[in-house]
Length: 121
Ligand SMILES: [Zn+2]
Image (cartoon, rainbow, N blue to C red; front, top):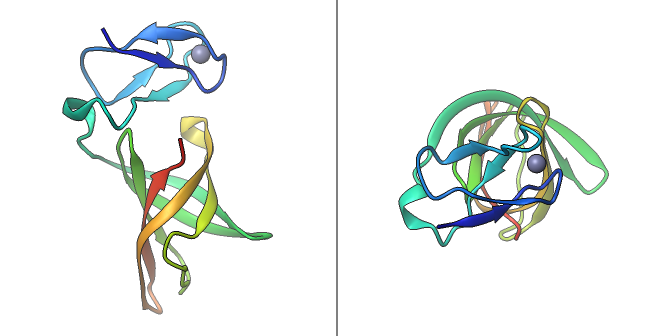
């Protein structure tokens, strides 16, 4: 048994099997399993528009992979991050609005930047 708590309705349920992205059986919100459930930490490739809030600034980005522990994003513009910088990540389509820590980033070229984020507990 692996009990996780839904970020939206705050109810707990058993999520011990299957896909890393699970939906809350009570309200349907996507639920991300804790980092400690190792067999569920594989990353899933996605392509969803998202917004990173860095200070007061909202940056348009695309989430390109996601796991219970974090997400990879591609930003449309060159953007640098401090190591361990805390940002807010909003992926409306997945009903995600969370703080996250930048674990790596690549300023890249005019084509954009990439960053790896770990969700804050
Ligand atoms: Zn729920």
